[in-house]
Length: 510
Image (tube, rainbow, N blue to C red; front, side, top):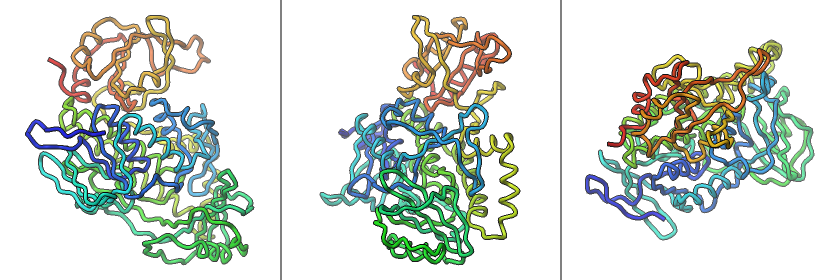
């Protein structure tokens, strides 16, 4: 539970951070903030955790994120899926070494339950049944107002983050510009029981529209239908299942009205992105920052990665380890990712929702996507594995990219991996057979950067062995989110290390 405290300016605060929304982004952010030592209160308008499952799996990059926090065992058995599609055009996501393969069959509700349990174990204060009614910010704090089971609630914090979805109250009330395009089509969705249909994983086109059917396990089938010429509707409530069944019959000729609906929803192909992810002490993450056609399962995955990028930075700022300017890198790094997300989902919408006039293009792309180069490019684009941040100077190919999982042999003879070393969400300086200079430089950041003396457990021995991204002697600085901020030269030198430490971790201890 939180306790009241006073800031350096004498202002009373109830917590360090207020997060609005307990979906995947909000809960991931809350957990990351707790790992960084920040106090956080999460306000969620719904009375219970969601049972809806818009997202049904994870891309390879999200799997890495969960692995670096030790979360994969909480999800149980995982089923890797090498197949995928780009706007209904098939792609092999397991090209090359197979690292782009995703996981299917994990409902968003299950993901939310796992993240909520983890966040609360870490000490996050998650409050359901609390609807944000407004907020006001100053140069020094933010005050939020909510309506909860006990009446009106007023909270003060250093920062407020909107993780409250596509209709974000934080975004609209905070004056964030949200340019883009309105929906041109509406798709109806229903998760149902008592229905047997052949799977249509990539969608099937009929003269009147498009159909998709996907078995979700435990006797549940997801059906999605889009009718050509159907005008998008402004809805305040989900559609009735009868509306979905009627549309399915018009497009397919089949009657599914006897099925038992579990969840019914609608969505469109609107594409919008907040012009800025931060306005002073108010920030946006996840669907509050970007909306798009939910193509290739990217929405929830990009939202979780937003939260991981923001969490360690915001935690470092509110605990006094870094200056507020560090938060500017959140927009600088994640806004281009969101822009690319909109670009590729817009392209997929044209392929996915277009009629027979688009079939020649689909046929051509089906042939193109079979080539390894095209498949590798699109798999990296959709999975997020091709992300490279501008983290500062340096020519090494790992700088700005995520640290690949690497087996290490520690000085005491134990073995570990870079992924395991990132579980505490602290900075990491790996010294792979280098001299003492990098360790000496890093002493001033000992409260936020762990220095690990190690060697590579497996070194390539023949030209046919897979190449290692690292060599010895070498030193590598890794941020808490797993991205590489600095790599020494081939001789293990430390040129630029102190600048990289300051840039990403603030000033050293006295």
